[in-house]
Structures are given as C-alpha cells and as structure tokens.
Image (cartoon, rainbow over all chains, first blue to last red; front, side, top):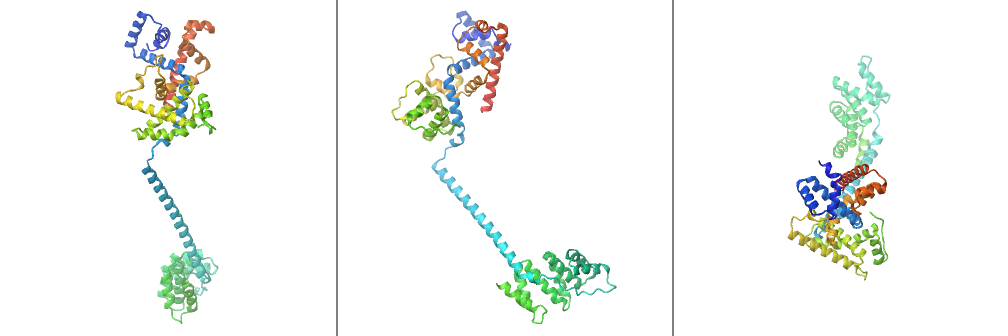
Amino acid sequence: MAKEYQEEPFQTQLRDYLSGDLNTDEQKYFDETLANSAVAQEELAFSQKLNFAQQHADVLAIAVMVNTITGSSASSFKPTTRGNQIFYWLGGTLMVCMLVAGAWWGIRNIQEQKAEADKVSRIITPYLQPLEALLATSETAESELKTAMENYRTGNFTQAAPALATYASKANDSNAALYAGISYLLVKQAETALPLLASAAKASADPVQDAAQFYQTICLIQLREWEKARQIATQVSPQDLYYPQYQELLDKLTQ
Amino acid sequence: MSKIFAPENDQELLAGIQASQESAFAEVFRRYRVMIQGHVIKNSGSSEDAQEIIQLTMVKLFMAIREGRYEDQGKLGHYVFQLAANSWREELRRRRNRPNDSLTDFDYQLADDSEEQIALAVVKDKQLQALHQALGQMGQPCQDLIKKLSLKKEQLKSIAVQLDYDYNNLRKRLFDCRKKLKQLTESLLTSNR
C-alpha cells in the first residue's frame, strides 16, 4: 500500500495537486486520500519540500554554506563575559606559574642530588679500598670460608659478600662479618654492609674493631648519614689505627 | 573553512557575496560575528540563537544584494547590524506569539513566499538543507528527471517520449530516484547532527 503512493498514478495526482491542476472533484477525492493515509501525507510533505528546494536552490546553497562556516566556529560561540575572561586569565596564569615553579623545583632537586652524590664520591673514593685479607684460614677451616676469602682476595666481591655474610651469621664470626661488610660496600650495597660492619665493630677486638668502625663510617657517608659519620669521626681516640684518616674525613665533611 | 579573503573595499566583498563565494561569506562572518553575537546575547538570546541569527543575516544579505535592494554607500556594517537586529526582534516576537511554533507549520507550497519566510525556512529547516545537498549528490539522470517532473510539471508520458524510454521503465526509474533521494537526505540529516 505504501508503495502505491510512491508510484504513478498517485505521484501524477500529487504533482497536479501541488500545481493546482486538479478539478474540484479530483481535488476533493485527493483531500480524502490525504486525510486517510499517513503515507500519502508524507509523500505530499516530501514533494512540497522538494519543489521548494529546487525553486530556491541558490538561497539554499548559501544557507548550507553559512551553516558550514558558522558550524566550524561553533566552539567560539560560547559567550565569555568580562568576569569569565578575568577568571580564565587568572586561572591560566596560576597554572603556568605552578608549572614553572614545579619545573624549577624539580631541576633544583636534581641538581642538589647530583651535588650531594658528587660530594659523597669526592669524600669516600680514596678510602673505598679492600682491607688486606688478613683473615687467617687454617687448613681445617671450613671450605665455604676458604672459598669466600679466596673470592675476596681475587677481587670477586660479588661472590664473596653473600658467602662471607652467611658464614659470619652461621659461625657468629665477627671477622667474617667485617670482610662481608667491606665486600658489600665495594659492590655499592651500603645498606646491607652497615649492620655487618656495626656488629663486627661491637664484637671484635683491635685491630678488627678499628677497621670495622672505619668502614662503618665510610658506609654512613655513602648513605648520606652525615651526622652519625661525624659523630664517630670526632669520638675516635688518637690511638685508633685510622685516626689520620678520620681527621681527613672531618676536614672534608666540614667543607 | 575557505581561504583567507581580504577584499580591498566593500564593493569587492559585495561582489564576492553576489557570486556566492564562500570566502566572501567567511569574511562577513569574521567581521560581524562578534557584533551580532553580542547583540543577541545582551537581548536574552543564547549562543545557539546568536549562531542562527548570524546565518539568517548572511542569507538575507545575499538575497538583498541579489535583488539589488542594498546599495553600497559605505555603510555595510550598519546594514548588516540592522538585518541582524530585525531578525532577532522578529524571532522574539514569534516566540512570544507562538511558543510552540515550528517549521512544520511553514507552508512550502506558497508561491509568493516573502523573503523573510524563505530565509527562515532555508536556515532553520535542516531537512531542507539535507535535501538540497542530497539532490546535488544524485546522478545527473535522476536530477534531470526530478527537475522535469517537479519544476517543469511535465507529464511522465511526454518525458518518456522525449527521452525515448519505455513508460513503465521510466516509472520504475522515477520510483528508484525518489527512494534514493529520500535515503540520501535521511543519511545526510543524521550525519549533520
């Protein structure tokens, strides 16, 4: 039924209706058809618009064009009152200031950290040397200790460190703890080295105690614990094996 | 958006408008948008109202120049503002008198539509704009057929004879063209939203 209104002869009647070419009876009949059919009404409306579009094609072309022009600038149609403008300006300025401040602080922070790292390196580099392997291992000493010390002597501190630490804990050996701490310090694991050296310093007698305390001080400097390092350095007695080195450290720490 | 158009004087701009150059309309928009927008918003309008009034003003300006009703006396800005202000005043009056007025009430059949009514229809009726665009995208045979039947009011039988077509085939072709036109219009209307 719908298709009937989209084809001849209805379309011919529709065209005659629009152009006023129907006689009275035909017009009356057509009006009845329209009244009884939504599809017919829809066809009429479409035909009316189609005729209009063709009659005023030039003006419609302008309307489509200006719609495109204004549509592409639609976002700029949001009104900005004077108050809004001030608000947006202030907000924008504040954001820029925060970004600049954040960048400045970040750069400054990085520079400070680098400066501190340089300071640490400058102070402790001369002292980051392995202690002579004086730990005597007899023929009857356990093989794991022998192996660990062999690694230490050959400069293989990565292997020596955990092996010596394990042995020191198992055998409660403060000498092994000293060398374990030194090994960890030399492979840049100061946090792991510190408790080993601290325990060796407490439990040992000279000269192991002096050595352990000195390397403990180096560890503290490595970890930026300036005050603790300074405290140890100022409290050593002149009889300490490392007294001259402590004085050098104090000079550098006060610079 | 069109390329930058920098007319040396208003006459050049008006010539561009009369020739339907997009760049000329873009220049009008650039010059007078803020003025019109400010007027509409200060007088109870929204930003959407402002956009519509700007479109209406540019269409009316085109019609006035085409009909020779605007004579360039160095007061183009003043004329444009008057067009916009009148359009907005009319719009407010329509809203007061007929709050639910829509273009479905517009009689597309009237032969002597006022320019005001024509401008309103072409700006506000997006389906009409989509129909215009769809017509432009149809193939030439369909365009010619539709034009012959609608504008020239020729009978289908005489068109079949002119084109040396079988009448029944031509009927089917017209049915297909109209169906395609409707589908294209609906598609454009949806994508333009």
